Image (tube, rainbow, N blue to C red; front, side, top):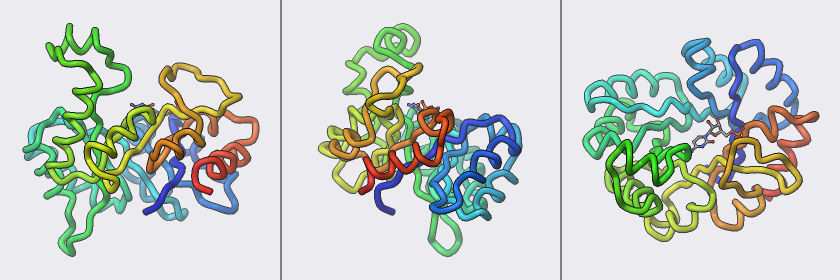
Length: 232
Ligand code: C5P
């Protein structure tokens, strides 16, 4: 898979997501389904969006004991998604078990990427609540290396970290980066942001874009602008 724009479909119902996706009559965007939509509509929403011809990143961020994650991943692999994810904090044993569960009898599997430290976690909360005292960027790089050594395909990270992750883990290790905004757009609650063109420049493999597309007056035009800046 090459560089692509993944649209974060953070909607609370099938009705809302389909009325949004119906606007895309030409190129079918790569879609991210998160916890909100999945918990509201269940696995059927994944099958329905897939049947419409979209690639899917199922963003459920699994984190549990290895055996439980392995079994859950085996179920998700039957949904025929393209990318799914977990928390690197579950450690190597959990990530390896996830890969085993995800691998289908014919040897194929969705790509598996890891969340390192959530972007909502800062140095202060990491030290206070998690008792991790290293600088947060080193913690993120350590989690990235651990995910790579466990056999994962990449990580979710800020576009600001994508270049460093490629230096440390190699060019093939995927960086999937939210926190993307147009130069003339609103940042909203995202703090460490980049434009699609800057994310391309720094080497992000996939950008995850939500509100700049879903809340735009013309979502298809906003999506096309992202694709033009990031992919072309
Ligand atoms: O609307 P916006 O472009 O901010 O959406 C970004 C998407 O990426 C959301 O679905 C958000 O949950 C997700 N995300 C993020 N930061 C992370 C991990 C995921 O913004 N570190």
